[in-house]
Image (cartoon, rainbow, N blue to C red; front, side):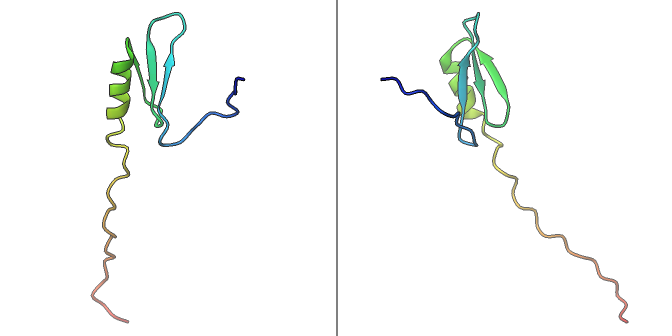
Length: 73
């Protein structure tokens, strides 16, 4: 019995490696859209596992301080 997938996984945790038909090359696809093509699976996976560096959201910036004038009404 073969079970066929009914949907493709998506999201921040999904990394994908696909074979490029007509070649011996593999393409790694990161969830951010970055792509890396390599000759072997080790190189693709090393790139994929190292690539997410920088995917973390930037550190929260401090709230801006509103300037007030020295006059009162």
